[in-house]
Length: 289
Image (cartoon, rainbow, N blue to C red):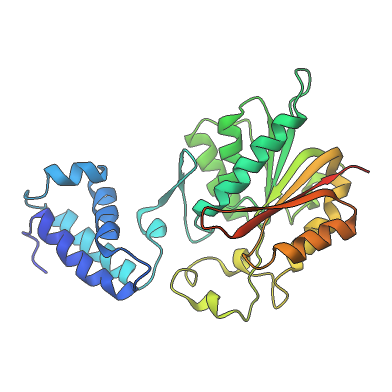
């Protein structure tokens, strides 16, 4: 490919390359996202630069990025960030790419935390398996006086989460390394939230282009898709204040099973919430014992 193209020519060529990704992907929009990240401008800035020749180094980067994207690599890993809530978060193959449906968990944590807040005692929130820090940092950005703790078993993921915390000056969030509740001793919280792995290891979905580049351990707990969810539900009461809430993300067909497990464990006020696509995506329960 020539390195003396205009931006419009480059975008058209990239869009053609990305057509291989299928009907779930808008090739032109993806091409524009790659170009905007490469040029350091927003999509609106691409309009005014459309007929301008591209510098050869930038054109070469765009060609390389478009080939990576056409191979199925997530856009966020290529450009190095993903927008979530009101934050731009650094991401890498060490963490899941934050998805819009997970913003539902942020909404629920904020709503439930407000119910638990008093003037003398701000609520304490725990984010289990924080990954890039998406949920914890979104909550902390909205309620800077709340006590927010985030755990993850991956040191690499925690390094990235802490980078995101520093970038957004949310350095009051505490990050702890360990599997689920392991690093917390006897600490208790008003709201516990988690987006754990919930895809069965033999699910063909794991081989799809949209997931195969992401960390497998953050996607599946093994052949039993509900294993991580059951572990969290079983152990959460030991770390919840009386009247505290557990909020869980799960698969679109798993809400009934998760709700039943919460009730069996002794949670009350169990209810599920739909994401913007209308799928039951989050289920919560209150520990009143």
